[in-house]
Length: 75
Image (tube, rainbow, N blue to C red; front, side):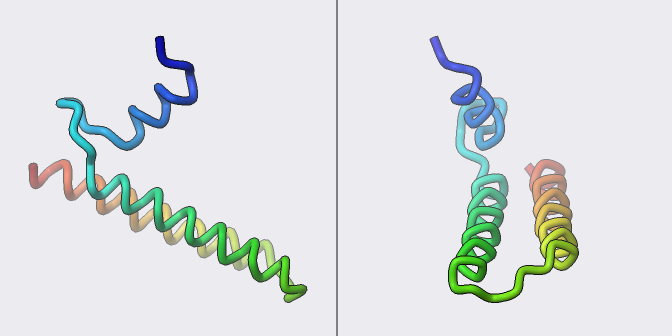
């Protein structure tokens, strides 16, 4: 029996037929890289601007969501 987090992760990255969805995997990697770079800048003592972070995160999520939508229409 899968836990709730495993089920959510599986549903977020896999297509209905059980295969990995490349566009969703790339979206998740882009978000992890974005958050990792932000954490690295805070760790190094640089000034962190939450407004810029929000705009950047929104742009990454919006672009990724559009990519997932287009991928779904093309398949």
